[in-house]
Image (cartoon, rainbow, N blue to C red):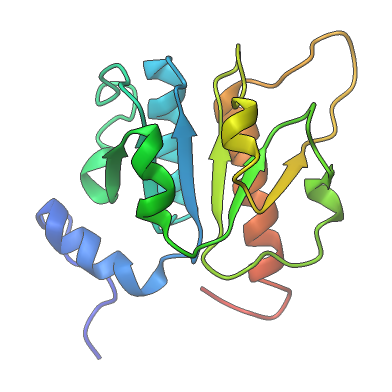
Length: 173
């Protein structure tokens, strides 16, 4: 039986190909995060959870240094706001937005296939006109004076919630 992964000196494309069958059925979309370090950290976390793709909406600062090379192994798509919903097509888009949330991420019993998790900036969130086009809006329960989580932490929580439901006890990768 051949090894599951290519050797350590394999090209990024060879590594991407080896990981393709293991990829999860969710994507991460980032709307105007405005923070190269948050964007890079999210790319690193999305790599660990093997997201289908990372969609960057709008002009974002260079994130390559902050992603510590993980961008080479990921499918990263750049788009603008008008073409974002065209790009995702019929895939369900779930906004992660505390103030407009209809329910919490922890109350979700199952995620739809091919879901796109949409995150806004830490400072401004997701604009109401974009939220109105989303299939669902969920929040992460937080307490205390601080009104938001760091973007990379929020994305990591959501990806973990997806993985927790995908890999129930007794299953393997």
